Image (cartoon, rainbow, N blue to C red; front, side, top):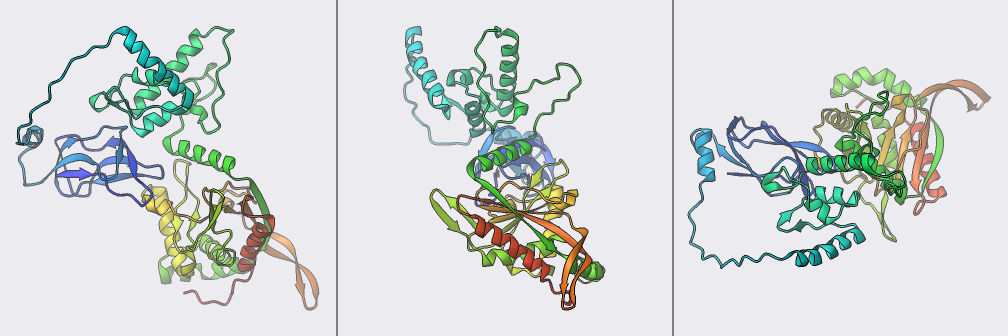
Length: 453
């Protein structure tokens, strides 16, 4: 049987092969990982469908594969002999109706013809910055073509790279090795009076431009991993796309802090869930988004798309220090217990790298808790194509003025800052500021007498 690249979400059409976990001819148990893949959202694994033998790899590491494309030939345990026999059967051609091949004419162009054809090609590539999907019968994956275009490579230069992939295909490793060599050669051979090299685009990670070692031996140069490169590109594009404005308010969350301290043990015993502050914040944001639909939106050209569903992303740190944003779909439909359950589940699987692509896409608004790092407030960058993001600062005890019937008094209260960054193309100060004020109002209006569940 053929193993196909599975569908990984509505917005995911392809994936890059990271590593084969099982070699050809090796036995594997059902649900064991056979291959690691990466999309533009998350890394994941493809499991074995049953006990059996992985007969043949149909794709190589570094290849970009479309959803539904065969990636391996697999033999179910008990349906074939040993691995060698299975491989021979897979390699043997199936009987088919004889085909009459068309006569092939071997035409070898002369040097003048080659020069006439290749010169316009190189000029066209350098003119528009694009490289062909295939050239001279050689296929280039979208990942390789994207790297070539970012680095300003001509088609001729790309064609000259030796490929280590299947059928001589150029992999990411091949093109990165070529670029490292190009940087090294330029630094060693370029004359002093040469014209300066073009400046890198802001979206291009600086790690790809740095030398592989420190000149003075005191610095350490670390290559960005794939996730960090995606984050860097996403953040730069967001700043280039949206004019960011940030509004700040301070909220008194004493009621929430006291209620949680008094009931967190009972809450966990009754629901089986730890009660963090995040569900309280998500609940307040969901209520405010329902009241201010202009913030629960995206921009499509000169049109504003108002989202009907309230799908809140919560930024979570991975063990590698990267950031991922799982999405709580229809967050306004959950009570505190339901939010605690889904928040804990998404947070745990974020740390374990077990999120599915659909669980990190489709968000309409994002919340980032910078208070977990001890920060009082922050100015977060919008998660495109959304138009707003809320940063939650640390909760701190502070003296505050309390208005009472007998007069104003100063008391110790649990206070926190809320920072709302929004896209000033479509969200003006009145809407952006009123929204974050309403979130604070919902937090301050928390009912301290509500039951645990």
